[in-house]
Length: 481
Ligand code: PLP
Image (cartoon, rainbow, N blue to C red):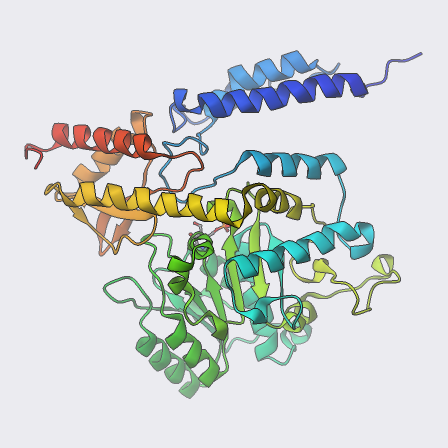
């Protein structure tokens, strides 16, 4: 009899156990790797065979190639010494939830194709809304509800699409997009908003970037002035995308004022809280959401700071009808007894893809494992550690703080040229001991230090500070203060 190409059940058990051991070992040893992959472009590609194997390989060979060929090209986002960009902090329960989702291998494109996939997602997103004390309008028990998207970029795209349809009495879908539609965001908003506006056919020239104040928050008076000017010019202002925790400096747009302007002029308000939203788990940080009850949609990424692996962007709408009406298409082959009934959610109408993984499982595992209290204590600790780092920086007169330094992101630079700061960052990252990233604030090259890795603790912050100071010693002639 011909040998089956499949793994036997026993081979799968053995390989699976070894892989879990491999991941557990990886987490234990992650600090022994340089945080930033120290490879040159093309190196990984060249190290692998140009053609696929004809007879398949055994698991030992596959795992050996992972160790020898793939691992050198990994930047270790799960290292507690990772302080760059924004986090992607996973956790053991999340990995297991994701594995279970892969194992079940379901495709939850319709409620009927796996009712649990839809219903657990609705439940967990309601849990989360309560955990973050989001406005009740976002709960699925009313007119709103939440859905998991792959990324904040997709969440804001759906907001733009629903807003476009609402503003045009759902005619854009039928007749094409109208050139007069105008969207608004701040100069500090994430680039995904610009991308969304392009994808949605609004056109980049119809996106207004509103100037910010000294804290990098949108200036509402300029927003209103621009809306009025656009209206006078015969345009149709339709959406404001505000940010709760900007990428560059974690600035918070004033949602209350912006929300009032949106209500007055009948604009959709979307709030992008990609990383910072998680902070609202803790009552003492919920001020970041002040005014959120005026929003039409909101998103935060559990895959950034809530110990849940990518991808898991949580997107909420206050009026799900606007969203589903904008995205609904129902071909014959998707019809079933439940379609059209109000008894179930059909999440395929809440985002761009039809197909959907059981992503709620990993969130459910995370929340079940840590509990609300466990998650709160971890977030508090990250903020505390970032603020300790801030105090050390403030005590060293060679450095300047470049932004408000709220929560877990500290933006700083040496009081020196951009070139010297660039060199400082290059050396830090090249050392492999830490990984930080940069931005530009008020025209100046600025280094960002974001504390949110799952296992980051005080010794990691101390080590990072020592590396930063040592490199600063070498680069500046000014002695430490
Ligand atoms: N919005 C903000 C404020 C962000 O900081 C980011 C990523 O840094 C994004 C959106 C995009 O996130 P995603 O990768 O989930 O699309």
